[in-house]
Length: 174
Image (cartoon, rainbow, N blue to C red; front, side, top):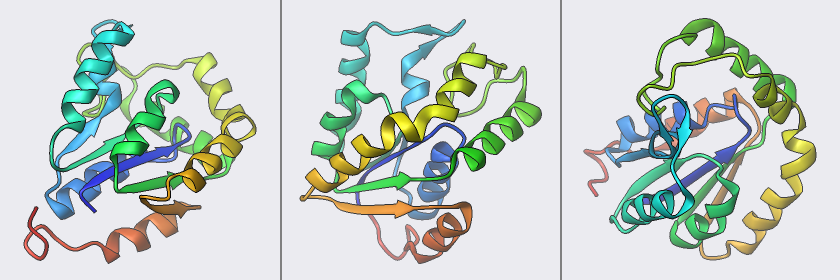
């Protein structure tokens, strides 16, 4: 496990899992939101984002969290492991609401500079509809990723259990 893609609904804990995996394994973490968003919630143009993301994917090892549907097939093609956080909409909404309550107005470490946490009704609607709109596609991509190990985690307890199975950086240097 040297090149890991983590996908799932907002609020499922993709960035939290990526950070925990990075701390435990020593593998560098790449938060796609941090690459994509410029100050004031301005997005990078697609060609710039693709170049930055591609440069990260050329590295020997990485844990990359984020959906970014347009580039997901490219990332899955380059990874050796895909982790899908397939949580219920309620679990994800709770995760988003907790995040808003605890970090509102501040910039999270997995977010671009100058992009403070905010309440975004469009994003909450996206979370609510994520499984209806994306679940089938996600499982299709997992089934097509025959070159990669696929791991589906259904809840936070499963995530904690998974983290306990990982080797530390000292046990498994990259």
